[in-house]
Length: 204
Image (cartoon, rainbow, N blue to C red; front, side):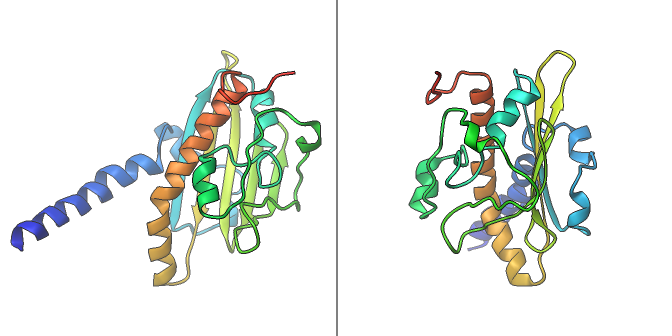
């Protein structure tokens, strides 16, 4: 029993001090992690935050064409579609730019699944710059586009959440690793689509 407890304690420490800090800041530089971003003020003080990022060899306007299509019944979530549908989300990714999906503004709702799943409102949507979902109650998810001098784009994703009780804290910490798995896949898919090298990409 002492050996088991020692192993368990070691695993917990590895998770808390190595694995969790890594996935909360996956791909992001220290400067990006510390950077104040539009919408941060909606969830303040924040109790849980992640900042992840990826470099995309495409201009911000091209990345935006894919980002703005997010949502169930729109372009999908560009993550592991089979896992989402295993959970009953009814997500179907669209691997082409569709003109009717190129518009999103504050007040619109982005569906993550059928009734009972999150339906966050669009708090801010600025073409080629940022898409911010959520509010002070349910937390926020934001995607920020930073054009680079060499013509590439840094896509930064930030989630900010709070909770009012112990149960909320436990539930968030349980789902946090799952959120990472899905979000990093989304970022990588958006990169591949914007760069024109995704296997499912449809060109006209």
